[in-house]
Image (cartoon, rainbow, N blue to C red; front, side, top):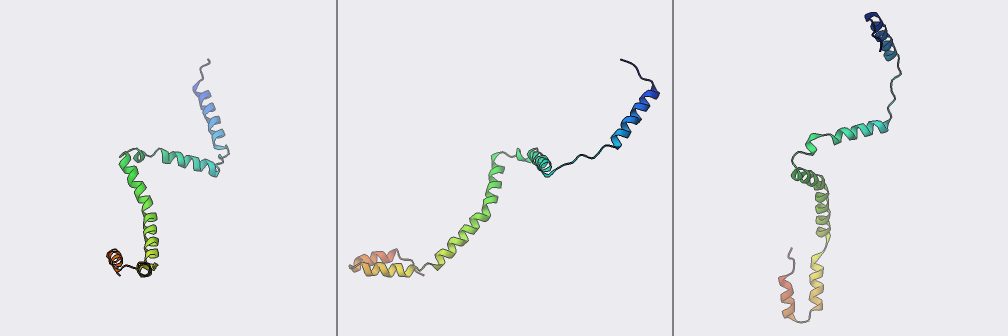
Length: 110
């Protein structure tokens, strides 16, 4: 291996710096950015801290809006249902008044 003098090292360094400055910028498409950002998200330290409790809390908070929407929809459906007609229908079908009094204990009073 040949030992270079200081002048030769300076020439090599200048030539390499000129080539570096004149290079074309690397093109990056959307797929590359997406993969890099996904990798960065995977490297996050908080994902591994806290164990299962943190993961469960995140899952609960993600499902909370869905649960609230379902409760609201079911509440509206039950509010629109007419429970008195079911009670009256049962009263018409039962001939014995004693049976009707037993059904009255379970009737929804509104």
